Amino acid sequence: NITESQEFSALGYKMSTSKDDPLCDTGFNGYVDLAEQNISVTARVPTSNSMAIGPFFTTGGSIGFYGQQYTGLWITDDGFVIFDPTRYGKKPWEPQILPNAKGPNALAALLWQNMKIVYNKEKNQGVSLGATPDGAFIVVEFDDVQLAADSGSTYDMEMVMRRKVSNEAGAYEIVFAYDNLRGNLSGPLTIGVENAAGDSGAALVNKGSAKQVLSNGFMVCFNAVTGPPPSSTPSGITASDGTFEDKVKITWQDVSTATRYGVFRADINGNNEIKLGTAEGTLFNDISAAAGVTYTYRVRACNDYGCTTLSSRDAGWRADEDGDSRWTATETFYIPVASSK
View 1 (cartoon, rainbow, N blue to C red):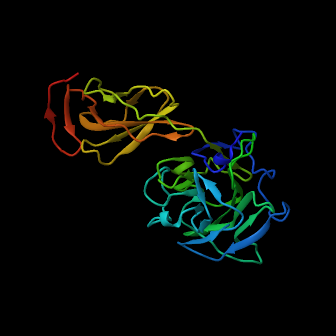
View 2: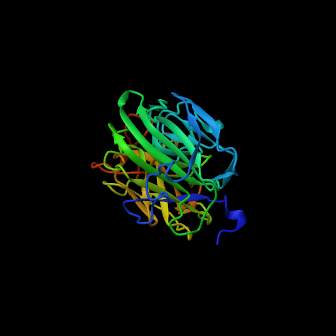
View 3: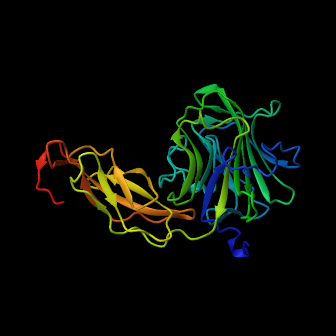
């Protein structure tokens, strides 16, 4: 059972969708009609572009999100809500890959892209906010929000959120629901959630296209998990030094509480770092490495409750077809070296 101290202590969220999870639902049998579900509209958001408006839901108790308690949330015109206005970022209209330390952070992104809110009471157009009479659920509904560059692309979407964590089967803490999707879904756009530090998140679409993902009636469910993340950062990171012509082989020591590992690659100076992918075991082959280029690699351990910090770096490179020669990512000439492995 969820104890009183765990009611707001979700350290992360396990994501599923109505296509792969038969229990995934708003709790109101699909897309929520506020009037039919006895959810009174407590506020409406005026026409806006490139700004966050709030706070809303400042009464009725705290809102739990990623282990923190918030006293309200802010609405943006770009398809996401934030729980901390100090983490809004400098270019909030540009969707990011989640997680990302760069702001915005502390967010729930229903359809994050460059959009605008147009309010029209007669057409029921705009953003409506409401809560159940007991305050247990809050609802943020976007009606006919538009692409900033294409007013013909409009979307209905909503976030249904529990203020507190529940351990009942099918009682999801956050649900995104979609309806009346008209126009362009090619993006790039992001759908997911991220914590305040920008080091933990869950995304269905990560700065990509949702054309083959979203449809009317589709729902994305986020179930709170309250256990601990892996206890230690991976150690013993080893990247092969010219051993293979078709890859760089990266290995590390197992972390007992990890269920997967994220592998990251940077240049020789640790710059321009990207996530290469995820491994379930303690081996990853970088087949995208350029022949002869020296890279640095590091790894983090993850489970359903979160991820560790990134490990220390180890340098490695893929041999070219002429033998074990390499060049650093910051240089433009080849340097013959003796093989070390």
